[in-house]
Image (cartoon, rainbow, N blue to C red):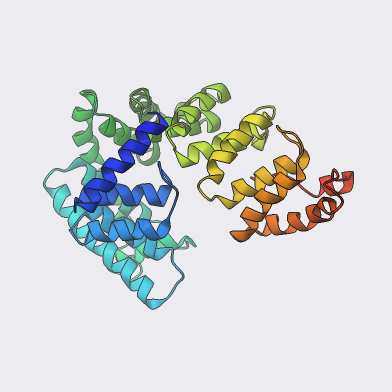
Length: 346
C-alpha cells in the first residue's frame, strides 16, 4: 500500500473514531502507539484506547492495561493496568468460548506471556502475570501452559478455514501461532508459508516477519539478506516502523549483514526522524558530521543533533559539544581525533 493510501486510511479511521466507532478508536490508538501511518504519540494512543475500552472493546482494554504498565510506577498506574487487563480477559474468554478464533489466539498469547512472570524483569510480563494470579498462588506455571496450549489449538482450527479461503488476517495469525508458539521445525515451516501468503497480499506485518526470518534463520528460513531487504522494504514503504528501523540499520552496516550503503540508510533514518525518533535524528547528525552518504555539513549535523538533544538523547548532547567548536571556526571540517569519537549507534 502506498503512503497516500495509508494517509487516506488514517483519515477514514479517524472520522469513524470521532463518530464513536469502537473498532476505529482501537485502530487509531494502535496507529498512534506504533507510528503506523502517523507520528507516534503515546498520549493520543491511550486516549483512543480508553474511548474504545469504555465501550467494552477487549483488545483496547488489554492494550490500555499494557500502556499503563509502562508508565512510571505508582499505585494508581499499577491498579489501572491490572484492572484493564482483567477486564479484557473476561471479554476475550466470553468471545473465545463462543468460537471467536482471534479471541482464542489472544488468550493463548496472554497465558503464554503470563507463565514467564517468575523471574522476569519485564514490567509488561510481570503486570500480566500479576493480573492473572500467578503470584497470588491461585494458579501455577503448569496451569498457564495448559491453558495456552488449549486456546492455541482451538485458534489454529478456527483460523485455518478462513486462511485457506484467502483471508489475509487469518493467514497472518496462523503464521504467528505456528512460528512463535507451537514450536518445532515442522510448525515453523508451516508458519512461514502462511506469512508468505499474507505478505504477498500486501500485509505489512507479515512482510516484516519474513524480513526478520530471512535475517535470523528463524522459522526454517535460509539466511538471505537480499530476500530480507525485499520484504522489509515492502513493509517500510507502507510506514511499518520496525521495518524502517531494520532497513536503516542494515544499510548502515549494522551486524555486518551487507557492505554499508549510507545514502540508502540516511533515506530511511530521515523517514524515522519524521516520527520524532531521537535515535534516528542522532544518527542523521552523525551522517552529516562525517559525510556518510552525503556531503559533510556541520551546520546540518548540528541541526539534527540539536533535535535529538532536545528530546533527551544523551549521545546527541555529547556529540554537539564536539561539533560546536568547529562551527565557530566558520564550519571547518572535523579533525581525525574528533571523527573517531563520533559514530553511529544502533
